[in-house]
Image 1 (cartoon, rainbow, N blue to C red):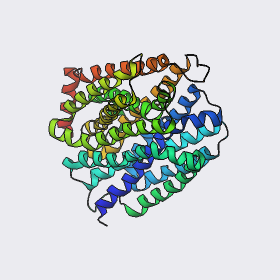
Image 2: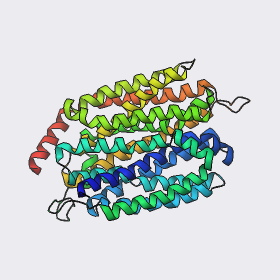
Image 3: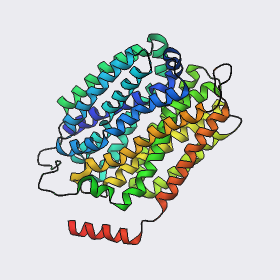
Image 4: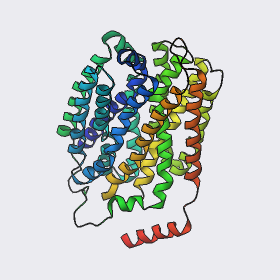
Length: 413
């Protein structure tokens, strides 16, 4: 097998698993709440711990990618997912399933960032965004499997058996990365050497352009994952009163939109510019959330269109990685993308958990369902955060800061 192709295949497989695990709770939320005695706030907190664990290791992951390389750093993290799946599958109460969910998130934290680092070494610079978006589009099929197919597997085997199988598949995927990939082709410099004083994360966090991009990733990726991987499910159960399979089908449409968005955003950015595409897609994202704020919910057939656009436009958060990576030299690539990714998954943690807190503030009906107004309040709060982040993203960086950045680049050159 061609080595560059092997790098693409094995990292795509790892990212497939990441998407599957992050989205799984949306379909099985009812079973988790029943079997483990969870409230909406419990469910939101527990599910968000995937992103908390994911975010917690981003900065040390960036250092590991630049020093050790993705070939070993990514599989080492994936062992935490193996342990997390086993704990999740055998949990009998909230503490055990919460720890398991956190470990699953930690283990999946390196898949996308490792791929971006590896692709930067294996593919031409002008094609990295295209290959990255293609890989993420393929990997996003994992969220499709976590929709209707997962509902079927849950009915047939139960959610515990699904996570036991997930532990085995994760172990095989990690082995494939170790045995089938390399950090870089011969002669390509990918490692940050000790004689290079690049300022590390201090330099990254002092760069004004970074602070225009990071909050948009926080709210855009955060809201996308909060809805796709959890709150779309309870909303459809409680407000539209759909069955598990009907809910799975609509979540499948969100995931299909995400996959399509990931697969196309790189090519669109290469043609029209990342900033222009990022702005347009965020406006679509805001519009796609509007139907969720209606006092009378749309019928499933109409809601499906909004869900597809929501997933499609939300996936364009991937472009924030490319925008940040362009601000720094290649040997800082791992740290640059993990720094902005810290905000994306930190946002997913806060928004997913916060939506659960908002929903739980409303009284459940006699049938145990939360009212439509509870979801309107939660979705509305996320919409406001997204709008504010877009305004901040479009606000020009102060002239003095821009001049400093240009002078810094001239000195580096």
